[in-house]
Amino acid sequence: DIEKFTLKLGYPTSVECSASSVYSDFFREAFFEDIGPQATSVHLKFPHPSAKKFSELSLSWYDGGIKPKLPEGCDYEKVFADNDGGVMFIGTKGVLACELFGENPKLFVKGQLQDVKFPTPTRLLVEGDTAGHQQQWVKACKAGYGTYTSSSFAEAGPLTEIVLMGNLAVRSYLYRENGKFTGRKKLLWDGQNMKITNFEPANAFVKRQYRDGWK
Image (cartoon, rainbow, N blue to C red; front, top):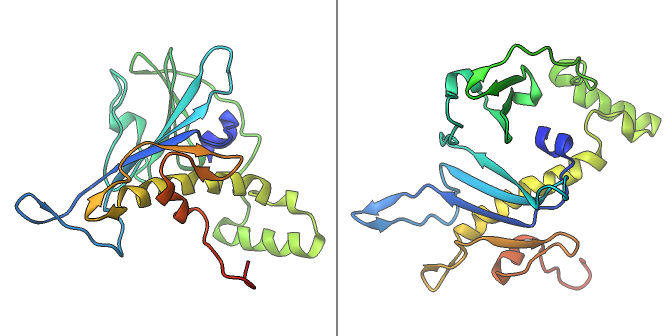
C-alpha cells in the first residue's frame, strides 16, 4: 500500500512472474494443481506518474524467502531490519527504504545511511490495535461515512486489484495446456476493460462465466 498511495499508481500495464519448482524425480518437474508455489517473484509495470521524465515505473514483489537485489553498497541488515519485510524505492540518486506499513523510514546514498529528520506522519495507523479496524467498520456502518475508515473501499479496491494482478500472473504461470506451461510469459493488461490482451486463458481467472439467472 505504501507504493500505491505515495506514487499514486493506477492500473499496471503488464505483469510477469517466476516461481519455485518442485521435482518428483531427476529432471522431472512435479505439478500440483491445488497448491501454489512456495516462493515467487512478481514484476509489474505502471505508467510513470512523471510521464514527462520517465515512460514507466517498475514494481517488484518477492516472497517465500526470495530477496531482491540491493543497490551497490547496501546490505539486507541495514535496509530490512524488520523480519516482516519492507519496501525499497530505488531512485537515480539514492534508496528510500521503510518497514511494514511505512514505519522507520531510512535514506541511503551510495550505500550509506543518511542522518535525515523525516516529517511527522500525516496519516497515523488505525487506533485500537488489531481491534481498531472492526470498530471503524461498525462506526462507519452506523454513521454512514466511509471516508472515516483508515482504508476505505475507494483506496482498498484499487490496491486489491494490483495485488490480484500478481495472483493472476502466478495462476497463468502454472496454467498447463496439453502438458505444456503456456502461460509463462509477460501478460499485458487492459485495466479499463479488465482483461489480458495477449493470453486469453488468463481471463478465465479474471471473471467467471455465470449461467443465466445468476449473472
